Length: 345
Image (cartoon, rainbow, N blue to C red; front, side):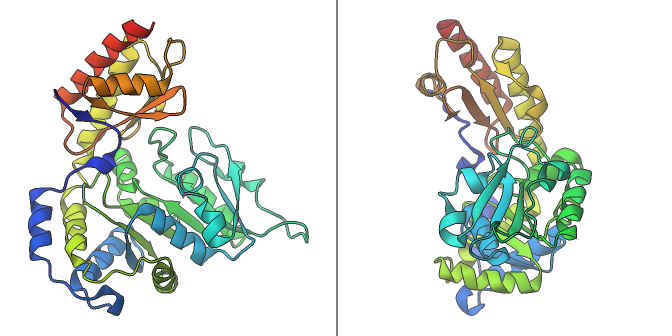
């Protein structure tokens, strides 16, 4: 049976060049700052983002949580979008690790504006927590891979600066945003004090993310990373794949976006409910509203036909294009969805 895995871009496999680089990687003990390959990756990532320094972490969640721990103090409040990954998918890490509470703000298809945020910034009041951090997610996972505009990010950063509040960007898929908008990634990153971005999603490295910011911020983050168990030893073996990812896998993200658009158009043509305006990068989310089936059951039926997908609650299904997915896989998926729709109408 043909298998088309559209559950996530986390299922990508490392390229032959990555495997070779891993095999040949020069390594050392990174806790002692003696792994030259990790150091090279951190420098490269920081330079690409226009930041002073970088820190290699095991995952995007670790990067986000370490950033929040550095930026905030216990009892602070963190503003983020109501379905942001840092709030929705990170096991209450902000509460458990930072001791902060979340002020969720509903965005427009996952995107916050300065006006949306303004009313949630706390005034100085003995009854209220301090607003310690503003988090933005770019691209926004649960909204379908939507992107912030540069103007929108600039306005948020300006507002935050007026209140002396740092901005952290969960840029797990920031390269997708940059490619989709035709801008250098540092043009996006300039509007955040810290940025976390993944190497292990669309860029296809086997593991790892980078957290970037000022030298002082990264110095503090390195200590916090050690606290939460993220100090690594001969990590150059995996960092080597990250270097290859940054050097060779960014431009090809266009293929994923084209495949996502083809998939979304196909889903719309069949008659599933889908907001095509959200399909800006490599994530496609559609609804089974109006059909005699819930999303988990449709996902199970897709799996029986070789298409792996994810259910987002009872009504929505998510499909993610990535390295290894070809146009023929997209067309096959659309055909299966068409057959299943007839079953559940």
